[in-house]
Image (cartoon, rainbow, N blue to C red):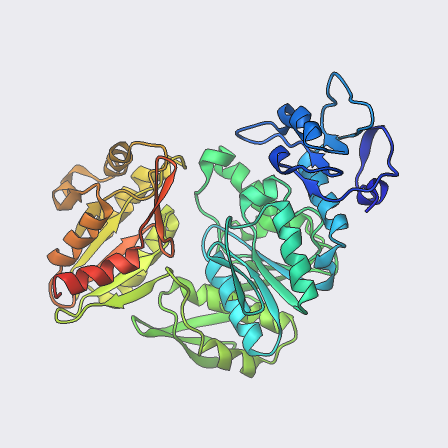
Length: 487
């Protein structure tokens, strides 16, 4: 594609060199640049791509897009200066791949909790109803039924456009994607014509990146700020920040809720470890997902399907048959002692409290609850004592352990979690750094029909320590423990 066509939708502030040159590909990693490609230099949180312009040229870059022109310009190379390289990269890639998202109905889901479950529900639901769909989530990417490994909640701009192109080429009608606050701030979703955007909820998370809760809210709001008048904004009005999301939003606003009046309403009739009985728009439906928080995810999926024109009874029928999402309130039961073990991705204060409240609602203090939890390293430190406090309030026994310490000292992280536990509750706390040993201890402490919650990692099949991902799956460790100790 000619360079002048690639930049058709981009406001370029300065051009040095020829635009009538063929560009074979677009890259933002100078190490991947080959002959005849466009290199886009971005300013990141860790590195500045402008430092690698010379390397990109040495590798064969035909053109450079950047926010600051180098002091020396190489003859034969075209330089394009833009105000925001991240936004320009996304727009250039959309043009290069032929705007594949325009061939799809793209539904973006944002919020602190519930994104993965909601997009998975939607993909399964629409697929069951005969609509070939794509999925972009924390857990995995899908094109129809083909599963691809996921690298980020929202892929980088290049991977994102390549996924859209594959979905288009394979006949997908819809794409359901998680939209993270990081992706919105980094402009990875620039130029995507969202047909619908869904807000689930918002609570403290990623403050290591955004700095303040207000900045985190503003980041999420960007998804709704960019919607067209033809789009639909669906918000959970039981969350007090929902209306903030759609201030000055051009799209048609629709609402869903369990506690307030809304366009789509549900009532939670029964909540058990086997599933949920809900009343949605006056119809009773039994769903195999567990946990009161999943009532919101199911209702959001129902609302999206109805707004897409699907028939209510068909939607409810298929929702009742959908299984839970891996690592989201996933129940594993032991043998002789009939322990109920629950694995959940809860890694924020709000998510952890939702899971613990749900367990308490079902359990009604009938059986002991043992909680195994920790916090990830190189992430928001402010949430650590909060999560320790919440876990101690609900647990009969709390085991603080290592999560993904990354490049931090796991013991230091555990101490910060412990700081949130009131002194009067510390007698029920154990500190076991080895996560496998912590899970085994919880299971061996559990009595008949007791409950063990292992929180924080969910579907993850690794533990990241000092930059190395070691194989580790909470679910497999639980199964191995039950078998090993004949629990």
